[in-house]
Image 1 (cartoon, rainbow, N blue to C red):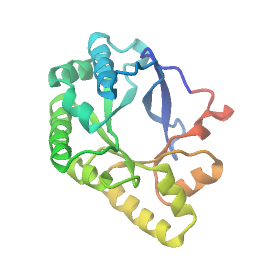
Image 2 (cartoon, rainbow, N blue to C red):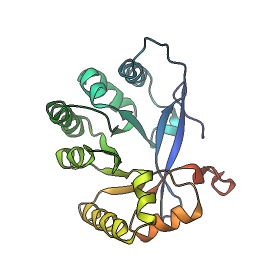
Image 3 (cartoon, rainbow, N blue to C red):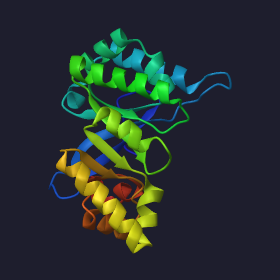
Length: 215
């Protein structure tokens, strides 16, 4: 992993497929200790309290950081905290897959849309292809960034029909000006496939190879 300006977090780069200087933004991943009675909602709330209380260091002021939020976390973080955090950092809010009711998904989508309109954050939908609600989260928010689940991508590598379905999806979302990210890229073969089917960004273990050391 790469260094991160947020305590107890590391950052993983989201890389453009074609650009010469490839980092589009950085995903903050929690690597701290979590007590047995501490929920992920509490972890996410503490993260936003930190972002609201601390301005981004100078070298990070122009870099976008993506932070993961479950549906419960979206509903549990006060909007005024998000407002201040978004004034301190360039944020992309990444909505993750979880088990949520249809009503909760709609309510969370409304908050995401409000935060994008009022505070200028980007919206990312994570884990598309991993479960039932990926398409709903996408249609509800029309995100700036769409992340294709790694297992879904690898299934498409082994089936022509799956590849055609995924390629059609990617073409559709790209026409809507979404950045389509292939997740869990672990080999050059994975990256070549992601490029061939139209993904314009990627992330995963392959980014940790020595040729990306300058990041």
